[in-house]
Image (tube, rainbow, N blue to C red; front, side):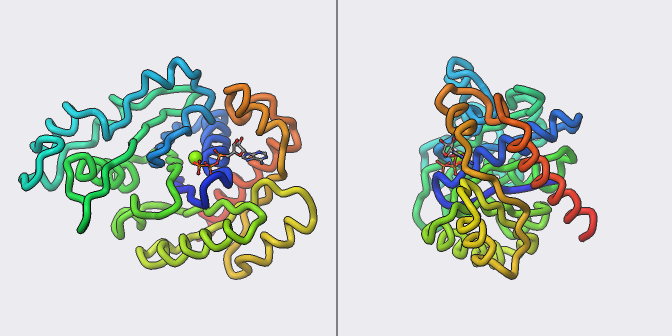
Length: 261
Ligand SMILES: Nc1ncnc2c1ncn2[C@@H]1O[C@H](COP(=O)(O)OP(=O)(O)OP(=O)(O)O)[C@@H](O)[C@H]1O
Ligand SMILES: [Mg+2]
C-alpha cells in the first residue's frame, strides 16, 4: 500500500502519517516513511529522539550524493544533468530505522523560477518516482500542502491520497485546492480523515464538506496526542485503546478500499 498524506498546515498530517506507519510496522509490514515536507518533523512523530533527529541529514543536503548521482554541481546554473540518476539503493542506505519504520527525509529544495532544475530537485524527483513506482513495501509519504512532489507519472503509483481536515473553513478550502491539483495530475483515489474533532457538530461539518469523497475516519481531539508531542514521544506512545482504534480503523478502511478497487 502506498499512501500520500496532505492537508493544510497543522491539521495533523504528520500525526496521521506516523500513526499509520507505526501500526503497519507493528503488524509486521515493511514500512518506508518519507518525509517530503520541507519543514520536516515526521521523525519526531515516530518517536525519534531530539539527539538522533539532529543527526539526520535530509537528502537535499547530501551534496556528495546529489553531485555523484546527477553528475552536476550543486548551486551552479546551466549544467547538464543525468536524466535518470541511479536512486534505487538510496532508501536502503539513507533511511533511519526506528520503531520498525524506515524513515527517509527529503528536505527542502530551493524553488527556482520556471520549473526548478537544480540537481537536488532532479535527484529527489527521481527518488520519489522510484520509491513510489518501483519499491514494493508499504509506503507512507508525509507531504506539504501541495501535491508537487507527485508528478503525473508518479501519482499513478500512489494507491490513495489522504487529505487530513480539521473542523474549520480554512482547512476545507485547502482541501478543495488539493483535490483540484490531485485530479489534474490524475490521482483518482482521494480520501479524507477528519482530525481534532471535539463533538457531533465538528463531525457533521467534516462529513458535509466533501460528500462525494469517502471519509476514512474521524480522529477526536486528544490530550494524549498533544501531550506526546510536548514530551517528544511517538504519536502512539500512551495512546489509549479508544484513540488507537480510530487510527487502526482508518488503516483498515484504507486496506479495504484498496482491495476492492
Ligand atoms: N487529534 C489530535 N488531538 C490533539 N492534538 C493533535 C491531534 N492531531 C494533531 N495534534 C497536534 O497538532 C499539532 C500539529 O500536528 P502535526 O504536526 O501532525 O500537523 P501537520 O499537519 O503535520 O503540521 P505541519 O503542517 O506543520 O507539518 C501537533 O502539536 C500535534 O500534536
Ligand atoms: Mg507535518
